[in-house]
Amino acid sequence: WSGWPQGRFALDVTHAQFVKEKKLLTHWPTKQNTYCGGRGSPKSDTVDGGKIKRYVCQGTIKCSNKKCGHIIRPLVDPKHQREQMDESCPKCEAVLDHYPCPSISYLIIWGQKKDDDKKYRNLNTTASQAMVGKETADGFIGDAPSCGQKFMSHPYVDHCLQKEKEESGKGRNTGFGHFRRLREWKEKHATVVCKDYTGEGVTVISVQTQWMREQAIPEDSVASETNPVSGLLSDAAHKYFNDPNAHLIATTTFSPPLQKWVPNLFSYADGATAKHYELHFITLIEGIMELARKKEIPLTDNLLLMVRVVDFSPAQRNGFTDAFVAFFLAQPPEIDNRSAEELRKAAQALLKGCEYHYHKSVTRVSRLGSIVPPETKRQFHKMCYSLVTLKSVDDFNQTVADLKEQWPKIVRWLEWWLIPEHACMIFASLRTMSPEDAAKLPSTTNAEEAMHASLYRTVGKQKELFSGLDGLLAFEKKIRLNYQTVKSKSFTLLLKILFVLTAIFSGNP
Image (cartoon, rainbow, N blue to C red):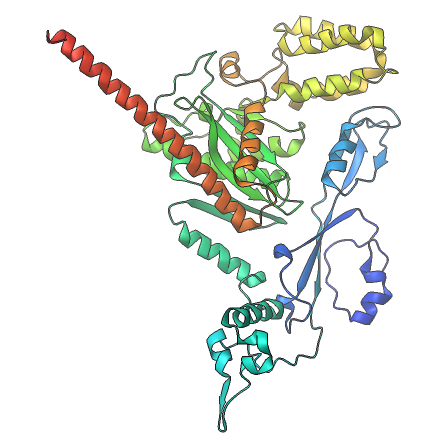
C-alpha cells in the first residue's frame, strides 16, 4: 500500500492487514464522512450491512496564471476551503482555481464477532413474540423477561430488536433499506415530482410540487424594469443537509401576488460538479417546457432566463449549458432543429452573472496594499465598477487599458474576469444576453440567499436526507398557503369593487 491509490480498484483485507497498513492511509487530501447516515454495523454478517465510511477527494487548488502554475493542497473543512479560495496566489497574487476530483473511495468494515448472551435474540421475531419466547417441544423458552427486569417492557424489547436488526445489516436504514425508504417516501408523496439519479459518481434527488412548477410561468406576471418578475435565480445552500459534501440546489422564480421569490425546484446533490447541476437543470427545464405546452405558450429560450451565481466556477455554467443542449437536441426537428454548437451559444445568452461576487472580488484585491496603494483605492473601485455598466466596447477597452497601466499588478486578476465565458455574463458591453432580458433580471442573488435564511429559520439545518426532504415540502406548504391567502384576499377585493361599480352604474349606490 503506497498511500497514493490511482484508478479503479477493490481490496479485501483482513483486520490484521488493515492495521499493518496504517488503516489504508492515503496522502491525497480527502474528506471522510459516514455513508447512509452512519448506519450499518461492523458486526454485520454480510458486507452489504457493514459499516461504510466514505472518503471524497478534495482535488487540487491551482493558480489561474498558467505561467505560475502554483499548486496548493485544499483544506478539508468546507468553510476553511472557501476561505482558502478567497485568497490570492501566494506567489503571483492571481486568482486561484479549484479543480475538483470525482474520486470517491469506500471503506466497509464487517464480520466482527462479539459474544451475545441475549436469550431472546432472534431477528426474525417481533417484540410480542420475544416476550413469550420460542416455541419448542418442551414449551416456550428464551423469553425476553427472563433476561432481566428491563426486558419486561415491551417497548424496550422492541427498541433492542430494532437496534440489533440495524447492526446486523437487516434493518430499514442500511444500504438496501435506504432504497426502500426512498421508494416509500415517493409512495407517500405520490403527487410530488421526485426524480432521483445515482451514477457516474453523483447522486441527485430533485423534488417539485405541482404548485412549485406552476410558479415558473405565473398567470398574472407582467415584466417591467421596476418589477422583475421574469427569470430564474439558482444557488446552492451548504448547511441544510448533515452530509458535509451535500448541497441543496434551489431555483426560484418571482411571484407577483407575494412580491417575493418563491421556490421552483429543490435538489439534493452529494457534490457540486457540472454533472450535479446538469441533472438539477434538466429536471427544471423539462418541468417548465411541460407547463408551457399545457398553457399553449411557445417554447422559447426566454422561458429559461437565469442568474448564475456562486464564484463563477464552471460547474454551474457547464451544468446549465449541458442540460439545455441535451433537452433541445432530444426534441423533434419541427420543434427545434439547432445544432449542439448553436444551442451552446443560445444557452450562454440566457445566463447573467451575479454582480455581488464581482464587487466582492474587487474589494478583496483593493485591500492588498502592495497591488493597489491605499491612496488610489477609491479610484480603483470606481473604474472597476464602471466596467459593469459601460455600454460602449471602445470605452470598456480603454478603461481596461487604463486599469492595467495604473495598477500593473492586477493584470492577471483582471484577465481572469475578461475570460469570454465570465465577461459575457457580467459586463454590459460584452454581454450576450439582450439588454431587455438583462433588465428583467436582478443584478444579484440576494433574494435566493434570503430564501435560504428563511428555510433555515423555518425548518432548521443539518437535516438527514428524508427528514430534509420532508422539511422542504413543509417549507413549500407554508409559502403556498400564504400565496393562496393573498390570492383569496385579492379576489374578495375584486368582487367588492365589481359590486360597487355595478351598483353605481345601475343607479342604486
